[in-house]
Image (cartoon, rainbow, N blue to C red):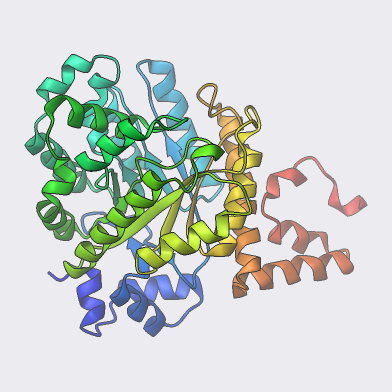
Amino acid sequence: MPTRILNAQMARITDEMKQVAKLEGVSDKFIKDSLALGRVVILKNKLRKKTTPIAIGNGLRTKVCTALAVNENKESFELETDKLRVAQVTEVDCIFDITASSYIKEIRQNILSNSFIPVGTNPFLEVGYKAINNSDELDNITSQDMLDIVEQHCRDGVDFVSLNCTLTKSLAEQYVSQGRLSQITTRGAQVLFDWIEKHQCENPYYERFDELLDILAKYDVVLHLACAFKSGSISDSFDLLQMSEYSTMGELTRKALAKGVQVMSDGIGHVSIDKIPSLVNLIKEINLQVPLFVSSAYACDCAIGYDNISSSIAGSIAASSGANLLNVTANVDFLMPSTTAQLREGIISTKVAAHCGDVAKSNPDAIKRNYKISFARRNKNWKNIVKNCIDKSVFEGVDIKKR
């Protein structure tokens, strides 16, 4: 069965394309043409039945993703399960499971069975989580293990996978010799880097990229090309290492699209706000305008305890410049796992950032929503004010009839 990209390239408008076109308020032809070029992706594994497909890309509403992560205790499992409920109630667009523990299969199956929105994972964490605390475990991971676990996640029904395919052996060597101020900022990328260092061989997700694409095409799962070397500090932004990784990303994006595999790029990290637009434009240009997932964005390095604010500032500018999917940041993410309340606050902050970006991009739905709430304010129509605001819960306990 052809992938979505191949269907679009053959000018076939499927029921799924019609469904997302209706949700986005665009034409079926727009979705078809954008899919054919790779500028829009649809998150929905062929095996998922109850999930509502979500379209991400140029000309569409900026989407919001929130991550869940379980550690090695039962309380964490229960907390992340509750966070899934909060994420769906607050209407995020997709879930990103970055669990790295012995609960990894259980939490993935729990999310997939209880989520009606798309779910993404980093499959490598399932084979590499033991190595986070014990480097000897790296000896037990083979390149075939890395591919097999991707197929397992696809078979389970995940809608997108996030993999550090761009972390090549040469870039790992460049990272060591360059002497960055900040280190690798994600657990999966750090373990993969350690694996490359220990085995002194190429990253299997890069070396066997064609095999990886065959797996993803089988299930029409979207590939998120996660950056290993996003800047972890303002000082490292726009350095040679970061630019080299984006070049590799562009190479892999072209290969993926040629095989009919949907792909999202990655980027930003810690970047001063004056440089965010040019970085977004660079990433989009290198990667043929495929959707950009801003999996982390910070406008400064010192907002610890208020990272949701720093991230929302950076995210709104990234979205206004062309980013298509923003990841949620809670205020305590640099300190500890967030509570349900902190996650909810981070979700709302990110939704505000996404909406601000959409207004700047003149997204029709965003403009219409702003007009409706402004019109309702003028007429003191509190019912419509509540209906069109981003967080309706702020009106809980407020008697709007007395306003």
